[in-house]
Image 1 (cartoon, rainbow, N blue to C red):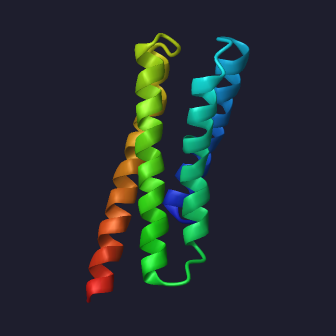
Image 2: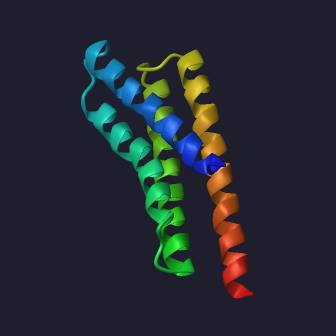
Length: 118
């Protein structure tokens, strides 16, 4: 069975690509759409990278960076909502997903750190 974090981060990346396309085409917004495209797709890429870690420390480092990128993505989503590029409904829909990813990443990093200490 595939890793839930891998699946959810990939599905989230697809939504981010579509959001970026929407912002470019419908809202004529380029700067913020590039920022969120970069950070939002980096989450899944880093999770994939961590699959082939060279050590437990490498795994923790990759997952920690994925967590930072997820947090940054949450920032860009809030900014898009507060500047009127996203409706509250659009924001809530995608914010729920990044919040879930952040929680999963926090749990993953904490568990990996506990296991490295043992």
